[in-house]
Length: 247
Ligand SMILES: [Zn+2]
Image (tube, rainbow, N blue to C red; front, side, top):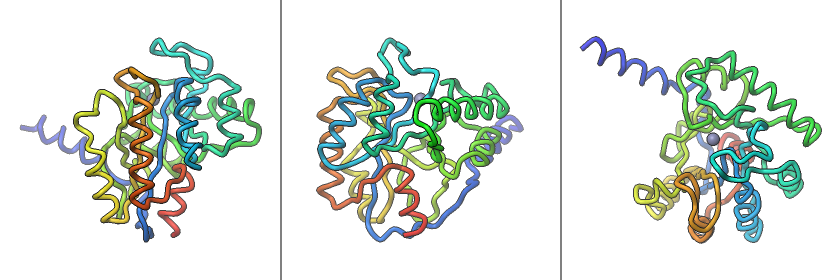
C-alpha cells in the first residue's frame, strides 16, 4: 500500500502546475508542432501550413541536424534557416534527444545551453522561448528546471488548454499514426471550439506511409482544414501563448 501511495504522490507532484495562467481567449485557438523533426516535416509539413497562410512550431534538437535518427533524414541547417525565414517558430527540444528524467536536471540545463549556442550559430540572435520535453518525458525536477529556463513548455499529455492553463506542461494531442485510432480529431475540435480552448497538435515525420511517430500529409491537411473551417485562429505556440495569456 505504501508503494501505491508513493506512486500516486509522485504522479501528483509530477503534475503540479508551475506556470499557471488563466485563459483570456474569446475564440478558439490551435497550434501545430513538429518534434525532433525529420526533413519531411520541414518540407511537406511546412508546405501544408504555408499554403494556408499558417506558421507552426518546430522543436529542434541541434544534435539531430543532418542525422538519420530513427532511420529518417532529419532537418538540415538550410531547412532550419528556411523555416525561421518563413516565419515559423523554432522551439527548443534540448540539444540531445534523450529522456531527461533519467538524466537529471543538470544534464537538461547543459543540453539547453548547448542548443542555445547551436541556434545562435545557425540562426543568429534567436532565443527560443518555448520548449518541448523529449519523449514528453517529465518528472518534477525536470519540470522545475524547464520552468526556470522557459516561459512555455509543452508536454504530450492530451487535452485542451483552457481556463487554468499550465505553461510548464501545456497539453498537446498527437497526430502520430500509432495514436490515430485513439485520437478523435473532430471531437477535440468540437470541444475546444465550445470552450474557446487552445488545441495543440504535435507529430514528427510528414509523409505517405508515415512512421508510427509520423503523420500522413492528407491527415495533416484535413486537421488544418478542420480547425480553420471551425473558425480557430492558428498560431505558433509562442504567439498562441501570448494570445491565451494576454488576450
Ligand atoms: Zn522528440
